[in-house]
Image (cartoon, rainbow, N blue to C red; front, side, top):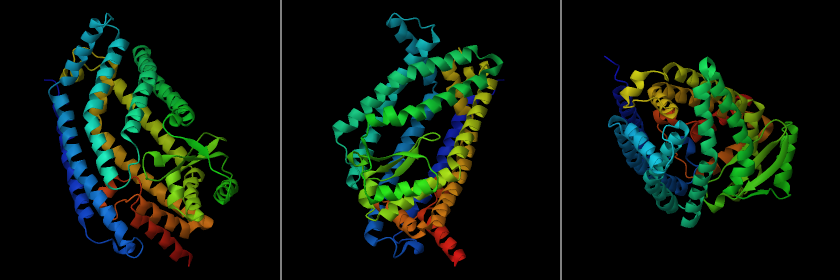
Length: 424
């Protein structure tokens, strides 16, 4: 008797939904707490706390509904074998267009086109409500309906342009890969990721946002001096018009080797009136670079990607696996989708492990900025970002340990203060 792969996958999906819903309930209870955590009393204003609490509760209620609908749809699509039905319909659509349904590349692109339409239709109500109701209610949304749909159309157009060549390449590699398939797939994805990391900030990101050089002034001089002191090869320093879409703030850096760039959200500059707070945030980001966190993360992702492709090569010819999900044939894309579902337990464990490492990196980057003399402005900057983004002030320890890639504010401030005590 064949192993019931489909039932096992759906069962585990439901179990994970129950477990994560339990964590969500714990976090929801934390959001309801009427008082600030003791370490934040006198640090966060009561007004900001009340706003943060209301925002967090709104998002939490929305999250419960969204996750329930998602698990209901995903488990139903698998259990009632809608995927194989849709695969057959996509082939019939090709025949209707006068194309060859036996061509796996055409068949796969037809299938993905249908999936994209379905995803847009099912995701749209949730996305619209999140953006134009929740985010707008709490003062974050700044984009118009026209801008929202313009961005969506641009995203779809990019998928249509970039997606088919990538899909075709993957199918050909799997069909021709032989015993070295995992290596070829990994090599292709490595090259693709490097190419996308290169062209995204130069060609794709400007399609959605406007990037302008940070004007000459004290802030620019301070950032350039900091980068120079750390031998960070800063080539360009940009401000992005994040305020056209949201009042949330951030900063990030990107680039390879000797061609690094730093991007500040205009909202960050508006919210942090003190230049030292912004420079401290940049010092934290540069800490990630100096401590090789970016490189370690990239290597970890490559190892995991290779292991995933290695696992895929072991199961891609399993007729029982495909038949369990309702497929009589063994298309490449369907094999990848099924494999991703069968390794969900491992993915959750890996995600949890990566979050642990990420939080450790955040503490290290904070400590790095402190060693540069930015303890006080970093502390003030973290508090400012927490306040202006209305981030959750009370966090459940189980929820944050499982979900958060960054430590809660209370823990970060405690670590900075502890460092100060040790210094004293």
